[in-house]
Image (tube, rainbow, N blue to C red; front, side):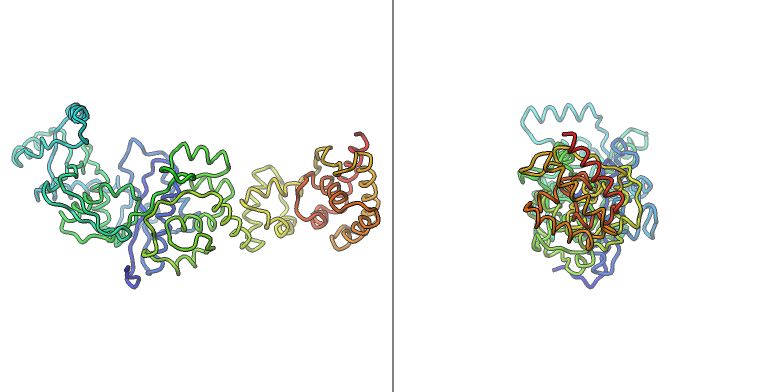
Length: 495
């Protein structure tokens, strides 16, 4: 059982090699929840040592994404902290010092093998149908010879010297003890020839020096978990608590999520990248609720705010079972959290989507619209297609949509003229004033409400589906509503 009385120090440590992914967001969320629950610290560390794959702007996108989600970190590259720097490329000397410590202790060694030799070795092992592994050529060099070659400036990397006998037992809070024979773990490179570390050294050193108490990370690191435990133990350090989170699967539940799945998702209005989700109109409350439950053993329909998640969070309730991406659940949680927003807050959030669509938005009108549309919104950008007509000077309905079911153009025109006659005689078009006489007309005419109100809806909104009709006409205003109705009559009379 995890002790929640001691402050936890946790970190999310993404590489700036592309867009911020849902998996990074979920790790960050669980880190944040644990830190807040225990009164601890949540740290952002940027693991940017893979220079070739680093994408300009990616680091900023990660920081923006965390803040958009409401996962504000206590220490990080842009705000500093007592254990900085928080970019690994700025900690090069630290890793070189620690690599030397391991070499001096006999737990690591310089390797002078050239890329050509390593490739030849790989091919030979492949031909023998062996799993690729370093053959130990430089491991067998004497420390004096290795030191002499290093002193002579010979190009080299540093490899960790794994024990070749016995086994390593590494404990994961979700998965229990993981035991692997040491002979099955390679002598991995921990310091590259350019002096920058690999993950296997850098993350272990940083977690120790930054006093990280719990390491939450993806299950892709399980294969090298025993290696990392050996690195920590080689220094004589206490291990953090290890938690390897569940894997994200394709929406079908079959196989790991791929780039192709991401491309398909975006065509359907979804994404696995946080920046896209924001642009698509998803809100952080909905996204957090959704990803929290992919790997957390609480009921899948639980609606929780971030504050409620903090109260309920427990590492002991996390699950190791793979979690399939379910975008229908995202829609459910996003729509639910949209409906929980106060009117002024929802108005502020949908306003940018109207503006992006080219509308000139009046705030006093917007605040009146929000109560009419909130129940129909799944994403914030739904507001444009559902309620953009409020900000149009004129609407352009499809003429065929003006013809009521079971009627022809001439009959529909007659209904529209009668509606115009009734509405134009009223002092205003507040829904309390406009709706009763129109319903009375429906009763007297023998027509259905769907026929009469359908014509009126298409005429005034340009849409077959809209927010409540009479409340919408009230916001549009009497003059503009009658103008639109008159235009519809003219369209019907020409058909």
